[in-house]
Length: 296
Image 1 (cartoon, rainbow, N blue to C red):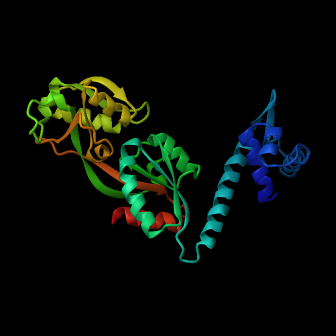
Image 2 (image 1 turned 90 degrees about the vertical axis):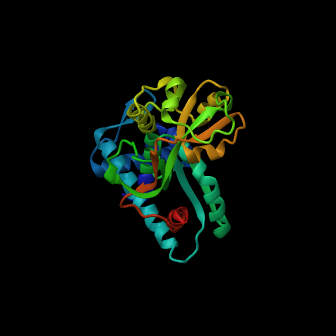
């Protein structure tokens, strides 16, 4: 069995049908069917069960899928490492970022490309679980996220480089403030406001931090909306529906005249941020340079 056959096998797994897999591989169906039969004969197992028109992995097929993906990842990373023996920094860098960290990327990407103009970027946005899956599949090489990272994999799977902490600020409709010169706000003032929080079905860390801080100041926030989208929450604040508490860096992407962003005068709680990647995985030179650049 060789790498070519493993790629054929994984294409069949992905497509669920030999016909579609052959089309994806730009080859005819009969040769692909023969390759699958040869693999099963060599291993002495059945790799797929037929379910109508679809093929489903047997237990043996699932084990081979896991091993094949791992072997191909190692092979591809080895080839990448060899190609990078020269000093060039180029190619495509794929980065995942949670929605509340997207605002940290544009300026750093701009200055990085001034230094390394041959580097291009792919950006994935999502919650911790989605980005963790993309990292495991090698769809992204780095993740910029709030900490702790709430993915399904064990925490020891990830290497983490902490970034400077990001203070929380209050984001409020400007018309709610009678004094246009007001520069700070107290936590207790939020007790009377309808509240909006950033939360998804699977990641609750930021929501929990804010609620805990409210309780520490003696009140239960009157939450009228939990939302997974920063942009939607900001739009609701701008419409006068409620106030929210978000990391300060988030607001650099939303300079709206109808809202005010105020630091807290009686609370100093921070949002921790970090760059993450898979432990025991080769990092491209471009990724290593980008991490260093992020911390400059």
